[in-house]
Amino acid sequence: MKVFWRGSYEPSADLSHQPFGPDRMVEVGEEVMCKIAERGDCVIVGRGAPYFLRERGDTFHVFLYAPRAEKLRRIQSMGRSLSDAEDLVDTVDRERILFVKHYFGADWPTRSLYHVMINTAVGDENVISTILHSMRSLEREYVS
Image 1 (cartoon, helix red, strand yellow):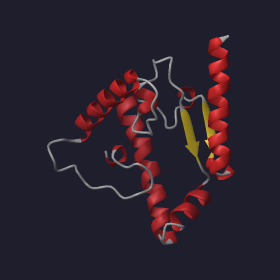
Image 2 (cartoon, rainbow, N blue to C red; image 1 turned 180 degrees about the vertical axis):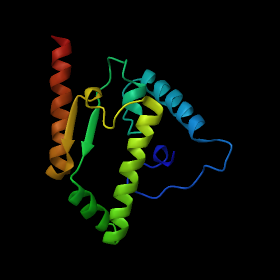
Image 3 (cartoon, rainbow, N blue to C red; image 1 turned 135 degrees about the horizontal axis):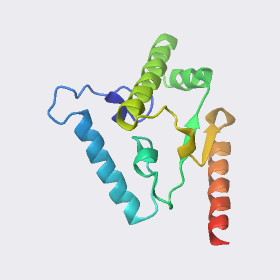
Image 4 (cartoon, rainbow, N blue to C red; image 1 turned 30 degrees about the horizontal axis):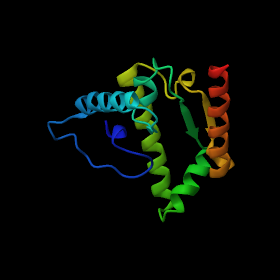
């Protein structure tokens, strides 16, 4: 599924004709994420990470979301037309829903997997400070 390769709302290459298909890509992704998580502190963005790492007690899962209008605004600020932005938002969101349903049998987003869910319309600085504050609070809970 294309969504696995897609980092955000940017186009992705159609790799479905190659022998290294979506199922294998997901398997490799899981292996890589688990190995990286074993090494220590890291940031893994998307690609099923909260599902692959859900049993680890040393992870902190954040889900970032935005209202449709905010998604469209951000995409258009990168020079895309409104029509292209709408198509991209619809396609990416649909692919994410299908990816999670197909590989994990769950609804996207699976809210119970995340420590916090943040609306990015509050601004990047607020998102960052919310994540850091939440992580520090959780760390203090574990230490005490």
